[in-house]
Length: 309
View 1: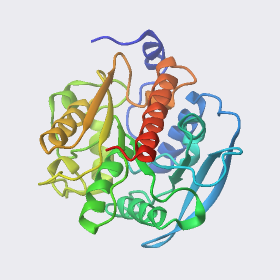
View 2: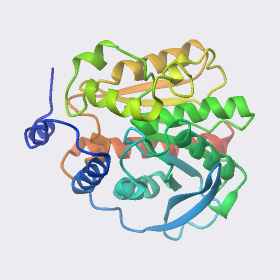
View 3: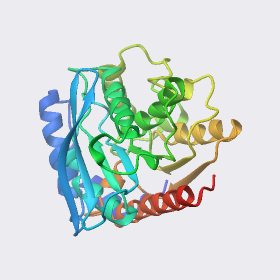
């Protein structure tokens, strides 16, 4: 299986671990890794902290906006990865600045509650609450009628599940769901899941899934692929890679949506490892993928402005 030389060099530099360290140590290690591998932040982007009302108190979030962009920007709700266990919005600072600048939008990254302290449904409930607030124009952050949702890995799961929740709750669908190597079926034992072990393994997935969802794996709010009906969901753009154990789930989501009449596309990056979207500091394709997503966002805003489906 093709592994890009920049990815191979990254994999060769990762020390072997005999066992999983305590959660606090995992969080610290992943935060340090993500920040070390991130590209420099984009110039000309402001960053501020806000809070949204949530089901268990305020949900803090970071908001990124291009300088001098004025009011009425479209909004990207970006749900960060980390298995609903590790990583924080600040670990995605650089990525968020580039998405804001190149996507010409306000980027909102909520600090949703995480397992094991706050297992399912806490992370999803927080994300849905932030989306609900954005749809009401909370905080005057941007145009409440032009909101897209995106997420990487577990953030991709949260984005897809948010679309399902919005449909059930009668909320408007986001203009698009952009899912980057998403985790969409926590009960899955797909071929890619059990056969690919490049940075992210099935054993690691099992660990975070157990912390987040326990045994409630068939619930569509845990595994969106298990939803009975996906008609009426937002158009989807999905990014995968040939080294990702979650790729089969991503492709299955696109196929489900297409069968239900939902516009869905899938783009595969060859030779990339799970997480590469954040690794633009050492992997050129990471920045390429960020620009790719920014282009999807600009096209989404144009369609909305033109009133085209």
